[in-house]
Length: 574
Image (cartoon, rainbow, N blue to C red):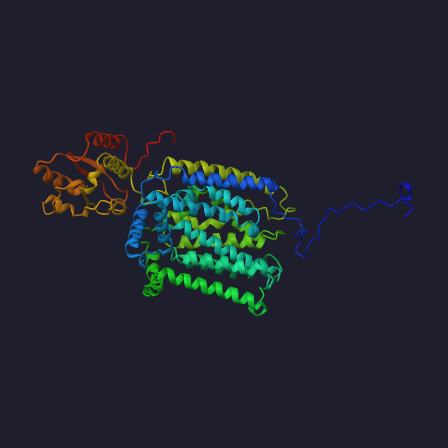
């Protein structure tokens, strides 16, 4: 004690060492979160969140009516029309889509009026909610949720299909909600909570709400639920491989308080009633419940046969290589994320999330039925960027390197997303442009809308549709009271009269004979190209010039002459 200057003992230096468990992994000290953001101030986090949402909003709302209505948007509009007429949605097990999305589109029409752009605005709002929901997983998975939010905000797939009025965005929201609740239950199990205030209640609410959204949106919810179950069953033996201590078991129901049991039971009953309400037209047609189960038999056959949507097993790899670089990186990183030792409190949730994303990739690879928007189901792979939860001793420089690479990939993804969504949105060479209506359709509708602005009385004229597959025309032209369908051969042979027709849409194989027949009656007509979709043969539009202003037809014909049916005309972007 007498050694040293002045005979005073020096205070011991604060040790920088950390305890190490029996596996050799550094144990995280209290308050030491290796998921902390590189820029950790609360103010920066707030501005960064608003910046992310602003970028997401620009991508989803800017020029929302730019693309011609999609095939599926026309069909969804038709179901909404039926909902207006019947006051309920009559569930069809062969449609492979639940009622919830149609009710949301119906609500959009109540608020915003009729039109595909109104549907898309509703879907764009849902797409914004999806970005916010993924960002909201930060409590469960750490800072990886923020990076995943940025990747999703600019992802070509999530932007492209977030600007369409189709079911996929809502379906993914249900997946995120369900998994958020399940991760909260896992965290509650880790601390042995039996009745911790709102914890179990909120976890159950997220799971019930997410499951309800999925079940009432698409029958393929069972793929997600099955993948989650398989991932969790696999995790017990994988924990032994990683030499991790077994996770604490969740408190059994008998350990819950009576109030907690009552509330959780009430949430489950409420979810069951909400499910029944959707599929029975709010308890007016109980046969809908049987149809719900019938749909699984129908879908199992469709999923295996492909029904014209068969793709090779490597289809998703090619799609990710073309567009989704952060997602492809997540797929490649997934083995390292799952197997790497970590001291983060978020490690287990992150590993399971990435494992679920990888399982989804395998499931949709095996199934022959592949449409490009199904790639959105691989969203958990985005949580692999960047892997901050890896142990800092073993991967001391990895987080900074990974953050740089992830930032570059997200930036490149944003550029590619802008190119696809605002310049090449009908280019049939793009993999995501699938069953897409052509610009010929847009030119025709623009000319028709301008004619109605000049001559509103023309709405009472007939429009004759004689093409093989007319969608989305039935929804778009349904406001014309005299719109009717016909066979091209009947028009050509004079069995179907078209004297009152403002325009006639007809397949190319019947067009010449129909035009000759109409001209025999002394009518002045013009014939313009009309290629509704790449999947079908081209057709034509025959217009009665006695009902049209010639300058409208001239400008319409000039647009057709300048560009092809699947060219956007935006030369500013290669």
